[in-house]
Amino acid sequence: MSFFQRNRNELKSKGIDPARLPPGQYLTDRFPVLHVGDVPRYSPGEWSLTVFGLVDQKITITLDDLKQMSSVTPTFDIHCVTKWSKFDTTWTGVRVRDVLALAGVQPGATHVMEHAEYGYTTNIPLADITTDEAIVAFAYEGEDIEPVHGGPVRIVVPHLYFWKSAKWVRGLELSDRDAPGFWEQNGYNMYGDPFLEQRH
Ligand SMILES: Nc1nc2c(c(=O)[nH]1)N[C@H]1C(S)=C(S)[C@@H](COP(=O)(O)O)O[C@H]1N2
Ligand SMILES: [Mo]
Image (cartoon, rainbow, N blue to C red; front, side, top):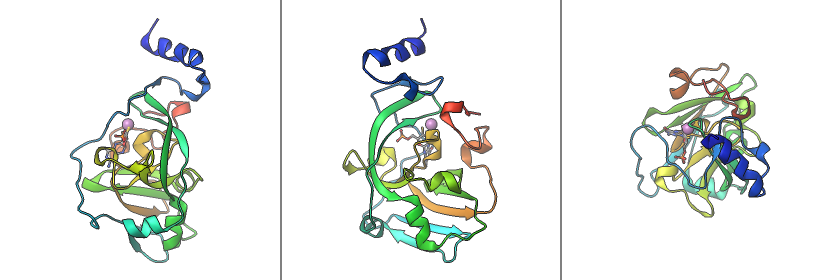
């Protein structure tokens, strides 16, 4: 029996619904760290997020601004394209749609490019980044997000592969077209639904 099959079979004995595990994935309790390049370190007050593109008014907010907005603390499963999934992760942040609303999304906007430190980008339909669960996250399990996991602030969009959740996010660009981000230019799927195994 393969590692994957054994891992999947173990879910039932742990009382976990196997339907939560997308095809081709295995469940891990660890929290792997995955990114290209270095981990940026910010001094207090240095981080900011800019919303630009097809908006009424370009805005830039600080971490203090973000923390003063009303936040949510959802718990959900995450799925990396390198085949690990982690269940029941809890994040605190502000819904992306509330942050976008500060700038005023123009009617023609259909997609968002997430821009992160060091030029990492990932593209996502506007509808997918404005769900109840898509957040600009500043805490993980009640603590500041560790720098290696994207702190001080990352995007978390649980229903797509985790490469769509930019760590160290610095910009959200509204657009009227879909354009490939970093991994998408390197052959990853433009959408990335883990349950449809849209890896490449
Ligand atoms: N800025 C940035 N964000 C990124 C990445 C990256 O390379 N750079 N990698 C993505 C990928 S492929 C995954 S699986 C997750 C990993 O997040 P983690 O290290 O907190 O597990 O971050 C995503 N966000
Ligand atoms: Mo990933």
